[in-house]
Length: 406
Ligand SMILES: *Cc1c(COP(=O)(O)O)cnc(C)c1O
Image 1 (cartoon, protein in one colour):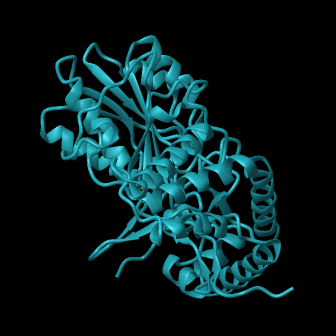
Image 2: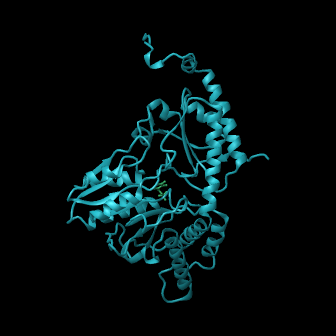
Image 3: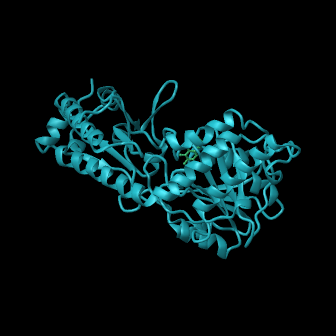
């Protein structure tokens, strides 16, 4: 069987909308256009009913009740709302927040903003495998701590944190626990009760739903979490998020959650099989490759691998019919290695040659085989041009070589 090019292996960045999701959304762009807040006529009622149905679908996926779901414009907003909302609401109680080094920028930059307003933030390091040590969280707690925010699974390396244990520590100390669940929800079982989560950020477009819609779970009992709004207006979403609801988007997010719930077990087995086929294929045919982050505690659809002795940009150019992400972030002037890999202690050279493979619902074995062949071909060719690789093969310890400088 042949494959269609280009191949999409970047499902941590975004996912295609599932056709079932699109079908569910379409009527709400047409005849069912009502404003869900219009209480006086059937157009409004149809919108409201659709939104409440979606609220149930989202809640069901994470073990919550529908009233605990707030719709937002995406997980960036959900992350902002959960952190800023707690910071403002509980300011009298304290000003200390605990997070960790390899959160998504939506969390890190929100915390940095709060530092400007007098909050103190502890950015915990991660272990070599990319996970947070729960004991580090415990030790960082002070009488002023009002919030602990740790992501469920990392978007670059797919590593899954010990969320249940961290949640337990937060609970023991009466501190609110907020989780960026974007990469985990819909992919692995997430249960806000079992996991002791008080706030959970979700994004539509990472789970085969539309872009520009997300949700925030806000615990209502044991404890009842209160949030200050960051958008003021008509008092929608129980006052926590004003603004006319994006009905088609919300319907899509709800449907995406329903499909994920029904298919998660089978899908995650399929992802794992594809991922292992990819990993084993690459490891069998290439030496000097290194996996970044824990293999044991990892999303089934993620592989993050460094290919030593190649030049990162040439590698990406060589595989331009495959959509992946690399461990280099192109800023205006320089090529910065990923802050995530840096925090794991991965050296600059290896960070620059790292590739994130993000598998998804619509990928196939044939695509995996194509990617293996292509990677092997391009990496081998680049290494033929590398004197360093040649020296390494001859058993010369490159770190001990005294280089002549001109
Ligand atoms: C994509 C992503 C976000 C941002 O979600 P948007 O809906 O695109 O704003 C936040 N956190 C993580 C871990 C992500 O992967």
